[in-house]
Amino acid sequence: MRSIERQAVQGELDARRGRDLFLHLETTLGAYARLRDETRPQVGAYIRNGQVRYERGVISGTGPYRVGLKLNLGWVYAEGLTDWEVDAQGRLLLAGHDGEGALGVALELSETPFPS
Image: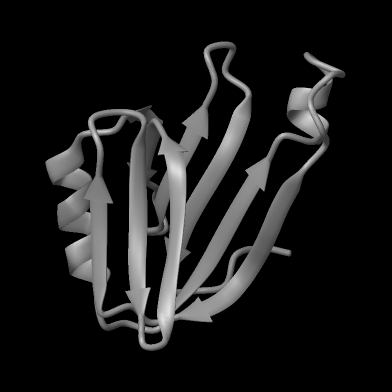
């Protein structure tokens, strides 16, 4: 992965607009972060292979970034994103890592299901 380039990520979001996609969205202050700071509460959210079709995808901020996907009846968003790539399968992978490299958030979009 490399540091987010806002215009490049926006282009990838635009290219996927209106398609049926599989979503992986994960946040954590739990298992990964807990190893570093036991005073922080263990929290997290996880969805894998949720099906979405968004009418608008937007990246905002100056870093870390926020990505929002406007769905028919609401929004999906992730904040704290720092890194990105399009992998060999054409999946858009966005992640937020802390200063020590630990994962805090991931938002990934794919035309095919993610492995279980």
